[in-house]
Every structure is written in C-alpha cells, then in structure tokens.
Length: 229
Image 1 (cartoon, helix red, strand yellow):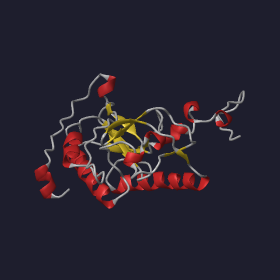
Image 2 (tube, one colour; image 1 turned 180 degrees about the vertical axis):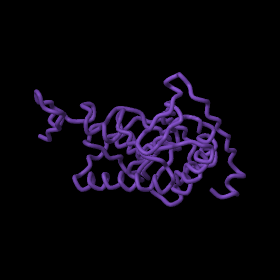
Image 3 (cartoon, one colour; image 1 turned 90 degrees about the vertical axis):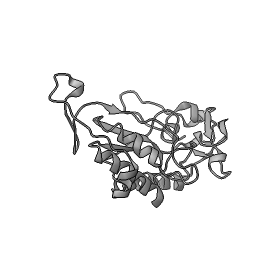
Image 4 (cartoon, helix red, strand yellow; image 1 turned 135 degrees about the vertical axis):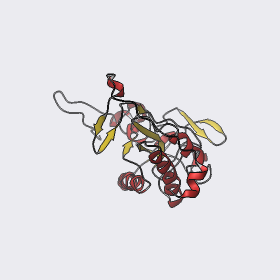
C-alpha cells in the first residue's frame, strides 16, 4: 500500500485477546491461513462501489479495515464479468481498475492485521436489461425466476432470460477462473463462489428456474445427478 493511500484510509490497530477458553475466540487453521479466532464476517451487499465502472471505493476500504479483528472477512458478492453483473452499486473483478480498487481494500485489511477472501458472483436471471446496456440477462433456461432486480433506478421485476449455450457455459466457467486469479492478484487471501439463493449456479439446480423436462432427478442410492432430457 502506498503512503498516500494510508493517509486517506484510517487503519485501526487490532489487539488480539490472550488465550481464551471460549471456543469462538480460539485460533483456527484454515488451509494456509491462521485465524486468530473463529468469527467469520459474512458477505454483505453494501452497494458502495462506483456505479459507472464497478470499482471499489475508499469507503469500502475503510469499512473492511474497521472489521479486521474478525478471524476472516468474506467480502461482498463481486461480479466475475460484465455478463455476470446484476445488482446496482456492487463491485466487479474483471477490469484493471477494479483490481486496483480491491487492492486498496485488501491492503487496508492486511495493514490492520486482518484476512479477507473474495466472493465470486454471477447473478444470471436476477440481473436486468437496465444493468446490461439493454441486453437480456442469461440463465440456465428461459424461465423467469419471478424475483426482483435491483437497478440504478430502483427495484424492478425480473424478466425472461436467455438460456446459455454450451459455448457460453464454457466461457462462464472460464470467467469464474479468471476472476479467481484476479482476486489473488488483488491481494485477497482466497475466494468463495456464491452458489446459493437464485443466482446462476443455483439456477441450473433449482426447479423454479428449470422447465419440467430439465429438472433434477435423484436415482435411488445414487449421488445427485442432472439429467438433460
């Protein structure tokens, strides 16, 4: 981190408590990371990124640095690509400017003694044409999830998405890989993939976003399998 940036962001000093008998406050080894405690800050959508280029701001660096005493911070959901972007005010991890913005955040957290991982996000059908320069969002099928999109002009009903082709699915997988590498370049200590709720990965698995002939079926005694009929 540059001295100029340190002058702009308040970095709190983290004082770790002595050995505690409380399990929540005891150290934990997670992969290559030594966590001073077992408190994990969950990812929370703050909508504080630059609305035009989705670059994290100084406000985000201050926000995460203030919470560096947690054993681990999971940063807010972050779009892996322009195609995966789908929530107003949220950051991305595909451009050089975004990587520099995230580097400010991770440097601030590390300077405060913390650890932070990125959460990689593709919203799929939860996105909206207003967020994609008029283009339809993409998904596992052409089923409208009947949810709410958060756009710059307010909350809007979701629309019917375009189903991804096999080639587009492969490109999306590559986008996840590229975003993971970008996260490490930006100084994150690791990555997590957001696959819950009704975002893209879940849209391939959830009956609500699949036509009846493509829904998941479980064979007795077999692991969960997807049958494309």
